[in-house]
Image (cartoon, rainbow, N blue to C red; front, top):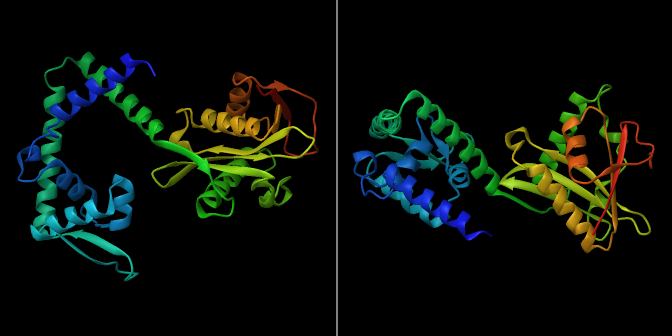
Length: 293
């Protein structure tokens, strides 16, 4: 990693934390630090499940419990069982909490305006565009890719989304019952299934089939709209190729539909070349292969 790039990120982090007041004991001139204020904001006027807040903010369970107790002691929230399921803990704002939430909302607007006000219109446009790009790239840096059994909930969620998208984009729809690969072919040693996640939300998947005496085959590559354009598909593809090499493959191949233009562009830009049909997949119009180093 280029040391200069690391230094840029560290300078950016210092500038942002100072500018937004993250180091102050009283964030936005209130009597609580940023962590408590952020948690109050996330609970919001409609309340929130504690587990969902923990996932969204990526907080340690013990630390979250301490923050909740502090807000509860201050009379800003109440924590109790959910309305429909007593096993689910839910946090809700009290009347005082709703008033404090409204103050945070107003003061957050004021802080944002204090950043923009000294700038020209052109500078404001440049800054907000850069912020939007930074936000997207930070999300990309949070994506993790790891093996997952195709029967696990995260994998099933990806596969359902994959089927819905193919059904919507293919000319004649898509029947998953005609799939050329079964789940048992996507677990070691026959193959593997990868899931990309942000926090615990699945945002992409890809599978590899390993048949003795045949090239490795990539299947079920899908990326959620929420992270498209962030390189997640390329990362999944690269990880599948790496694992194919580790399994001893020297060639990988795949098929795709003509309507999946983004996928076709990804494959071509990643070194795949078109080959004659190697299967009878009724939904395929293009077949690609790539030698593996």
